[in-house]
Length: 320
Ligand code: NAP
Image (cartoon, rainbow, N blue to C red; front, side, top):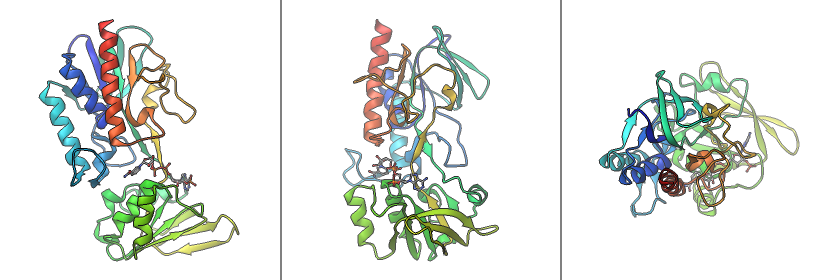
């Protein structure tokens, strides 16, 4: 590591790698702190959420689609080609009170830097049920990632449930129809939030069944899930649905814990608050890009665009 870095990028999804490509090509010699690989998909992973995605069909330039991990490998290769340096650690705390900024890593190192680009993304939310985590650990049949776990033999030709009504839920449900005998989509309302194209895919599938106006009260089963306990949001009636898997897809939470006490302003949803038409945070020299600062669009391509903006903003700041 250099004594004082020009720019440190925290995170390695589309936003992180794109800012690395731009910063490296601007001769800023960026350091990208990519995170430590983890075994649970509920925590931020190196490469970000696309590492948990099979087919990406809406990233321009890949008319036949590309898998998430392949796309991220390409991003990384391109960033490295221009000299991006990589550190496989997590940033655990930040001191933005004075220049140079100080970042402490999980390996106990302190990195000093003139600018920081935060691109740590977001992680999956859970329902918070009594037996959810117990059955999520050790392969009990509860998961927040169908793409990671859905093809396991335990779910083959078995009924499974997906919870949620957004694009993620319907994408996961659609993926699961390849393996499961039936996919129930448990939603707390009577219409999906997901895009029309995703809804059509589900309504056209003979294996997917929406279950409207239901919340999940708990997951049943000792070592593995045998069913889920549901409550009707209109009648209050409780019922049991027998399934061998439950996939939770109810949105994400931005990865900002390491910013506690750093003075970085968050918006009312807990995402990093940005100044209009820029990647600037409330602290000069600290920029943010991608899902950690975007509760609305949250697409790979919009995150990559934000990564580009953050690198250009960091470059202008350094020039000034
Ligand atoms: P989302 O759009 O926020 O949807 C979350 C869903 O979970 C909603 O239907 C919500 O219900 C439900 N939900 C939230 N909390 C719940 C709880 N405690 N209990 C039960 N249900 C709960 O999140 P997302 O689906 O992860 O999508 C996030 C963003 O990424 C969106 O902008 C989406 O378009 C995008 N995305 C795009 C693609 C793609 O284009 N291929 C794929 C995935 C995601 P309500 O509807 O009642 O609020």
